[in-house]
Length: 240
Ligand SMILES: C[S@@+](CC[C@H](N)C(=O)[O-])C[C@H]1O[C@@H](n2cnc3c(N)ncnc32)[C@H](O)[C@@H]1O
Image (cartoon, rainbow, N blue to C red; front, side, top):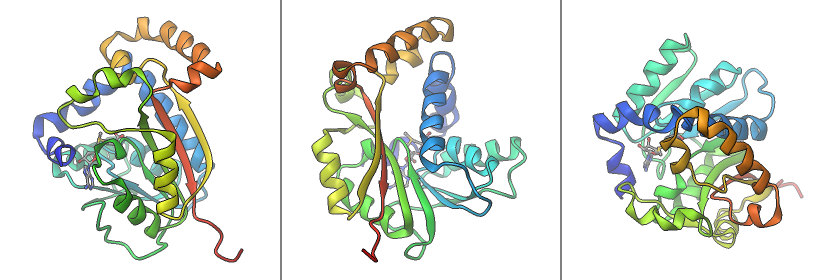
């Protein structure tokens, strides 16, 4: 799998945050964090969260800071090193646990977490269903994830990306959820102009552009061609 190997290079891990989330990319970081926080809601102390493919720990550290009892798992030692450094900088080393492991074989018992989060993960997966089933297995209540969409401008360049970038239709996501016995509780579609554009421009230009993007995105056609979707899936109530 290309995505798995790509993130194991030191240089890729060291530059990961700077390349994606500085300048105009900070708007992407902010939007993704808002999506995660709004889906997970207020974090009671002890809310157990697993972040799958946690990478440099952007969400792991944020959620730990909000009171979550959180574990971040990733297959890349190099990305995890960045995550540990980030948690240490935030004074959260004792609160966050980072584990090296493969998302297709999570080292946790069934129903172990309240919420499982997987951001920027499914675009790397050739066979997403086995991963979704595994995420669902270890969650008691919620699986939150994002996908890049197949009717956006991303189709123009996605095939060029070295780490691979699978695009999803809504039908494919519905089938993924059905195959893993998950139900959809919420969805949001955003970024008419794909992430790649924002990260290539300075923040000062990106900010007004983002306002325009949101205006267009709030229309029916804009929503239709949005390049990223955020999905809030739930475990069906077994007692019903
Ligand atoms: C695009 S990065 C996303 C990192 C983080 N979720 C974020 O949004 O910043 C994808 C991550 O998936 C990890 N990854 C790829 N395949 C994996 C697998 N089979 N199991 C666990 N992690 C994996 C990579 O090492 C990398 O850190």
